[in-house]
Length: 91
Image (cartoon, rainbow, N blue to C red; front, side, top):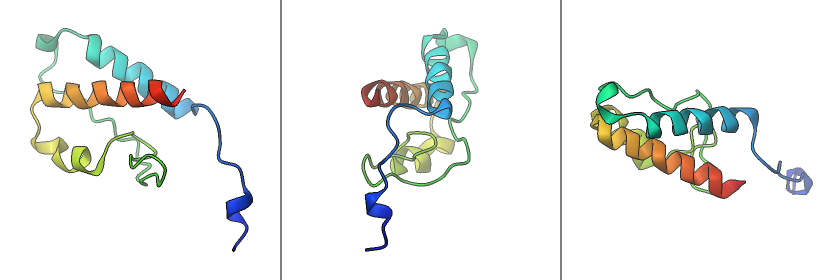
């Protein structure tokens, strides 16, 4: 035991989570035809959470991360929708 098990996990959303949620809502609610290019949710904090199975930076699954570049704009908006739902559920 190294002691890290005794450190409580942070509760609530981080500032990055809140920013990502706001961006997700903007992308999900924008008319589909307004953007053929959908921004990546990556925030360069690439570490998978043992608790959720999602990246702690962008809230995507490994499958979503791996498929991002080849995904259609509609599929990417679907990933953003999933991100918003995950963050909302974590509140």
